Length: 362
Image 1 (cartoon, rainbow, N blue to C red):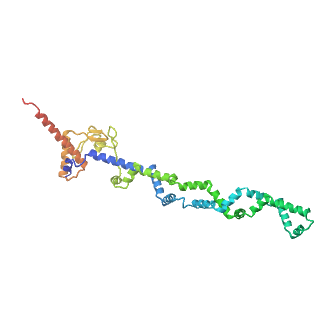
Image 2 (spheres, one colour):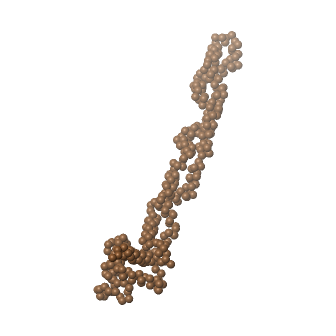
Image 3 (cartoon, rainbow, N blue to C red):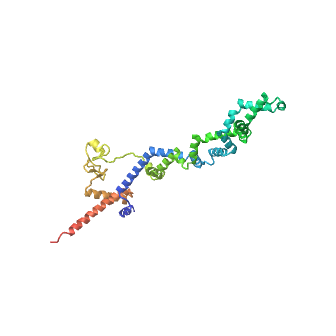
């Protein structure tokens, strides 16, 4: 059956089998070499990093950040609300105006203390009684009354007491030094700080994750995931493609890469004939003969025997007898070699027949 399949071209030639096996070995060697490469090591490190729960959790957190729900937003909102408060607005208007400055310049001064002393005097019962007497006019008390009235009608005294009794000044006293003002100033300084402005910009940035080192690692991992060697490695590493090679143990190899046979490895004569008789001979029941290197050929990294036609026919018949009578099951490569020779041998007869038929008659 194997012979019939080979004749029908269903069994590949030996060269194709060897070529396929060599390609498999080359790929297996590449697999082993790549398994220890820096590229694969880097890929595995990045894969472990970007698929870790810590990385995924932090990535999700960064991407879900929102300025509206942040502490920074809440503080800025509180600051803006305080900025619009009427009492604080009036307070800052007061300290920016001139009325408070003029008030402070007079407050506690000798002019005010003198005026209040005179006011206390002229409003006293005793002074009022003196005002009723004939001696009052032109007296020192009369001069004091005139001075009091002069001061009282002056714009400085009028403005001073008007401001002192105003709602503006009352508001100033309530706000100045208060916790509300302290909080406003604290927030004002906070929202103007580099830290706040930087954080606000970060939280408002929709591409904030793309600016992190994590993103760089993820991009590098994705790039390596598309690497041809990485894709190939994970595609074949767990398959049974190389099982036949993994089960083998190399015990001998000769690539025949020279132009002569290595006689330290190969015997070209009968061992005991060479050792005992120092000559070449063949044992009687052998179906072959040693020719001491004369019919060995090395070509295209292969070695072979050059046989004459009678030896080839004899060798083919021996092969057939082994299959037919000894029930030997040859390898496909061995069948291929024998059938290839048979085709060539029969083809030579066909060519001879054609040559004879072309010879012209007498």
